[in-house]
Image (cartoon, rainbow, N blue to C red; front, side, top):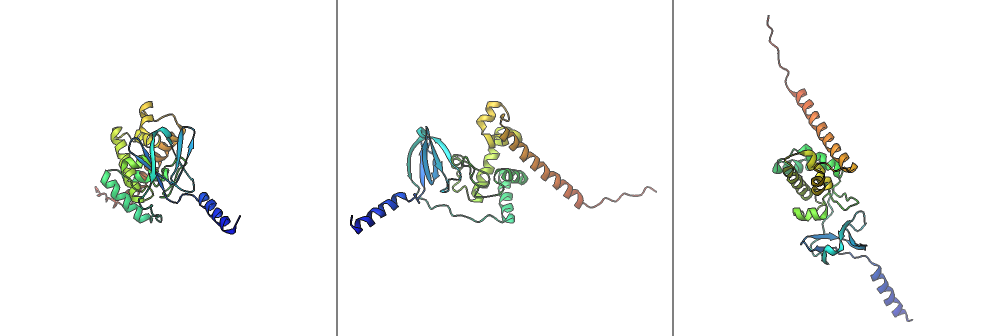
Length: 230
């Protein structure tokens, strides 16, 4: 084999071995799309990996996928973790817009991602409030790793769940974790240890925040002078 042919063959092999750098979109029959870096078929489902390192994936029944196409939109830019004060301002603005207590939003973020805007769960949930790609698409969230976009979508979703369950916080949190279908099926918190621990952790953290606020308010209140009756 000539040197030229060896070089050409080596180039072809190297190109085959290279991972796809451009992201793809899985277009579902229901019209939703899921952005992913790579995919594989496992039995009757297709695993879609949102990140190249394979840290998490989303499983979609293969028969629900209509086709794949290249994602021609600009890739999401990695952003540095928001400074605590800046993140507090974003949470305050969004909680005001959706009429939710910012302490509740903080407790949900703490339980979901530990305030890591780039968190990806084993099941593929992403960002501060751990939105699944399909849920994010339904909520109109363009970039789940953008703190503002993620918080807007997650807070709006939590508000919708609260309205659905007549502001029963326990049911709304259970639905956020396990899905409304499971809450409706069991008429309350489903019998999953993960979901029960999740709900308890958030409510405990939220109550601790409110108790600390009450103590701080009481400590800062001016002492009331008691008039002498003599």
